[in-house]
Length: 226
Image 1: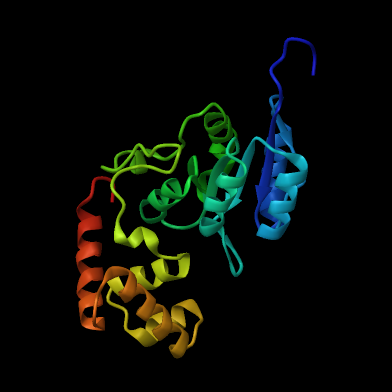
Image 2: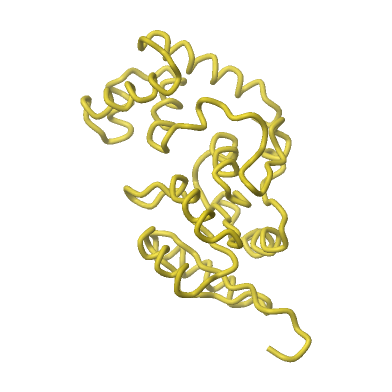
C-alpha cells in the first residue's frame, strides 16, 4: 500500500462450505481496497481468528451445521465493538433480517446475490452504513440501529434459530410430525422446543400457539415487501 492510500479493509468469511469461502475469496482478492483473510468453517475457528487477526468486517453464514450464527452475533459485537458484521444467508430475508439487525449485525445479504453485491456490501457496513435489500428496507421497522435497535422488540425475537423455523413451519399449517420430519428432529425434541416457544410467548396450549402462528403469518403477508 502506497503512502496516502486508505488502509485495506480486512475481511474474514465464516462459512462451513469451502466452495463458498473460496468463491468469495476470489472476489475479495480482486478488489484493491479489500484484504482477504483465511476463512473459518465454524464459530470456534471464527472466535480464534477474530482475536488473532482483528478483521474490520466479518461475513458470517447464518447456519453453520449445529451452530447458531445468529446467537453468536450478540457475543461477537460485545467482545469486538468495532467489528462490522455482514450476515450471508439462504434464509428468508423478510423473516431473518430483522432478527439479525436486532442482534447487532450491520448487514444482511442473501447468498443468491452474493457474487454481485458482496464487495459493495462490505464497503457499506465498513463505512458505518447498514446493508439490506430494498424489500427489507421497505419494512416498517427498518432502518435498524447499528447497535441492534430497529423498532419495538417482538416476542418472536427471543426465539433461537430452530425455534423460529418451528414457528414458521407451524404458521404454514404443518402438523407436528411434518415439522419434525422437515427439520430432522424427533418428536420428543420437537415437543420440548414447542414448550419453550409457548413459555416465551406466555401461551398455555398448542391450540393457542397455532392460532398465534397463523395470525403472525397473515400479518407478515400484509407487510410491505412481503
